[in-house]
Image 1 (spheres, helix red, strand yellow):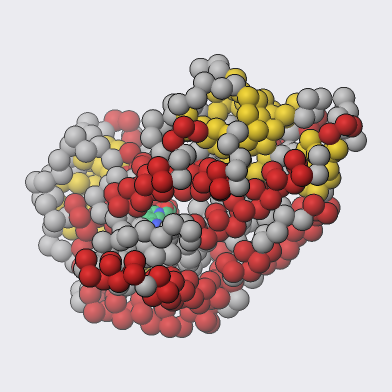
Image 2 (spheres, protein in one colour; image 1 turned 90 degrees about the horizontal axis):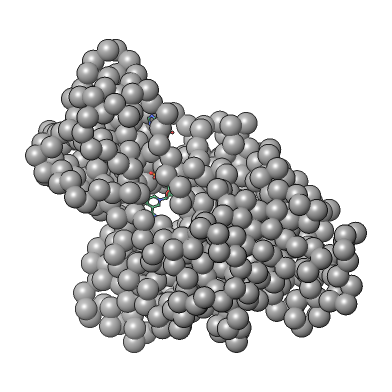
Length: 495
Ligand code: NAP
């Protein structure tokens, strides 16, 4: 732990992005940095999501830092293994002394005169930094549904990302609201022991098979002895992801193969015609996130599980009342209702040059140059920022590109004798126009509601192209895209 109050770089968040940034700074010989983390441990989403069955739906050989491969006990590592991997990577890279837990950044404001960021933590502590790297993620704030009577429920209830492990679900009647990527993982688990599980579905997901299997010790050793084999496996998974992405960004016709896989799985795993019909999505594959599970449909077909598609009217002390007026009793309610994904960086307040508030700049929806920088907010870099989420590949691959880019900018500041770098407004505007054009023809703007788009249907979260093209675009930090302020000319009010 460090009690320093000023440093060259402040990284906000200690998940895969923040730890990856810390490792990169250290590898570049930069020691003058802090990682501020609001919780009391690192791990981000892998620390927060401890629900039964929590696992990565991207194979571990791809969902890891390319420079620090993991030794996985199965193809799709579970939450504990992924968190242990991140802890080990942080420890191995000597990140520990840079971590400051229990430090939630309330506000960050750029002081133009002194060319530095002033950060205020909840509780009042302050810090200054030349550069800020925000790595707070897109899926860190649980969304609770606005259903009447939610507070009246007499039993325990919780969100999937805040699992209450003190309450056992064996023998209980459980109501689960939501059928997204989280619910499809925990429902099959809790259904094994619960007396009854009612799954309230508003919109069915497309569910593709998850070809998970354990790796024997021999296989794990082989991956370690033959790194090329691991790389080949990594490449194979990556290319499959890019194939899916082609369908999402070029034409859904390219999703004919995955559509066949989805339908085959549905038809072989659910024989009841009525239940099967409830599981057929009415939108283009990929518009909402495709989920991966070989257990979801069998769980829905269980005797003790019912898929309820009648809309929820309200929540009563004893259970859930559907629109038809039926009270369906529940001992416990679990909300698998996702995250608040559109207010990037919230609730942190970020103000840039001239006191401009980032939340005002983003009133019509978040946007950033390459998802990383915003004009008017010098030396402020985002990892997993606007339009950098993926529908079908590993976010670690995106993060590594962003980390390298931010490091390039931070290095340029000292190498070029600059006090700040601010992306040129015309460069950002040109990029944003391209994102808008590309998004318009993507599946994400094909007319469903999802966590990727604003109420007006604008894609603010996903990268609307192939993943490798993103990495190509951000492979080098290009100074020409930025207004650069030399050190000797710090103005009182910059032009
Ligand atoms: P989500 O995908 O946003 O799903 C939320 C679910 O709750 C949806 O089925 C939604 O229905 C439903 N819902 C929300 N409000 C409701 C309401 N008022 N009444 C009824 N239903 C309501 O959330 P998530 O499952 O937590 O997943 C979020 C993201 O986390 C995923 O897309 C994925 O990127 C990530 N994730 C990743 C993994 C992994 O293995 N890598 C695992 C879990 C999660 P509608 O569809 O009708 O809105």
